[in-house]
Length: 129
Figure 1 (cartoon, rainbow, N blue to C red):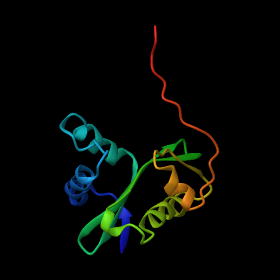
Figure 2 (tube, rainbow, N blue to C red):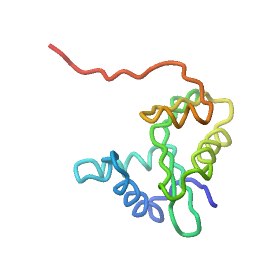
Figure 3 (spheres, helix red, strand yellow):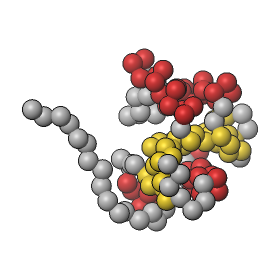
C-alpha cells in the first residue's frame, strides 16, 4: 500500500473514475468535474494505491495553519475494512502536527466506529427573502 500526496498528471483520471462509480458522489458529473479537479489541486489531497490501483483518497482544507477540515474521504468498496481511511487520515496528522482536524461528514457511522468525537453540527445556510 502506498499513500502519497495527489499528483494531477498521474492520479486525476483514476480518481475521477472512482468518484464516478460511487453512488451519491456527483463530483464527476459534467457540471462539477472541472471545478472539482481544480479543488483537488488546491486542497490537501492524498491518494492510496494498492499496486497500480487507486483504491482511496482524501481531500481536506487547511484553514490558516490552525484547523484542517476533511471534506472527502472515499475508499473503493473492494478495499474497505483494510484501514485505508485511517491511514489517509494519519497522513494529515503526520504532515500537519498540532493542527486540529475536523471532518465534514454525511457518513457519521464510519467516524463513530473509528472513535472520532462528535463536537458539533454543520448547518446548510440558504438565502431567504
